[in-house]
Length: 135
Image (cartoon, rainbow, N blue to C red; front, side, top):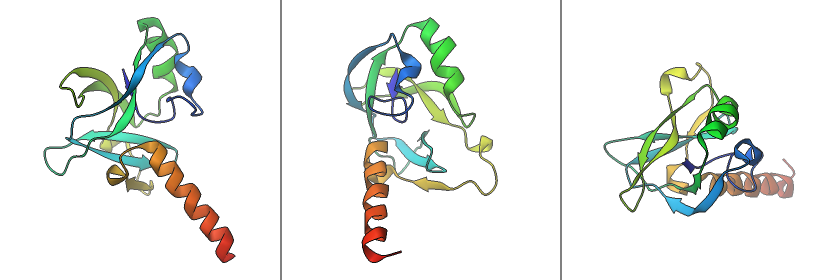
């Protein structure tokens, strides 16, 4: 399974798939947009144009762990689907379901940053800048 957000190593929900095996870092094929939802979690969306490769991690997750731990911890705006990786293989991943977003939800296209960790670093850098500027 491809993980690209808060369940990746070092993130707050990493323990949601305890018992899985880390297979390594990887990237999607170049046909996805990537969104930060309320600055809480990312959402991957397949697109036919203007797609980008998105960084993440690949795990072998036992079915029981997926069913009992990981999926119940996922935000309601995401659902289990399949994606294509840069090497052409197909794996499971959580996909954004735009119709499940609430009116007024902050949704930011972060595809150009390439991954959720890059977005988190961007937010942290801007927070430090605000402190430096006294805002």
